[in-house]
Image (cartoon, rainbow, N blue to C red; front, side, top):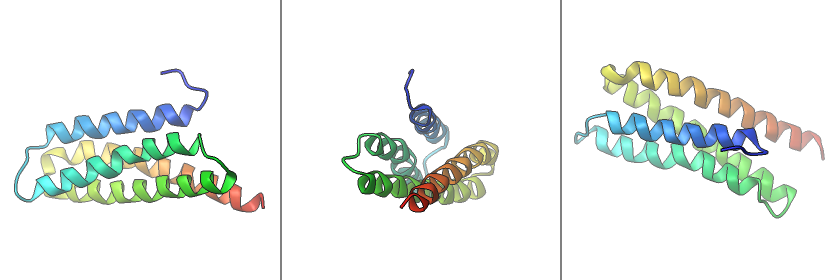
Length: 118
């Protein structure tokens, strides 16, 4: 993927990494709902960022970026829970947590910049 928006590539890769991670975790009555949640939130970060880049207005763009940040924060929460309840996958969860934490900071910087541009 060669995009004029490198963050599109980064969020897409993160989605792919979440899918690979989920495939590694053995389903159980406890873990299956968590895996379902993390698939939704983790892959929606990139989808919402793609939508942001095609926003109809600055306000629409800002709203989509805010959703990206919210989904990233939710994903961080699910990663924490899965890492703690599935110690065998804690290292992978931590690696993904580091990436999603950086994405959260990037989205926050975009939001702050947009607010300061008013």
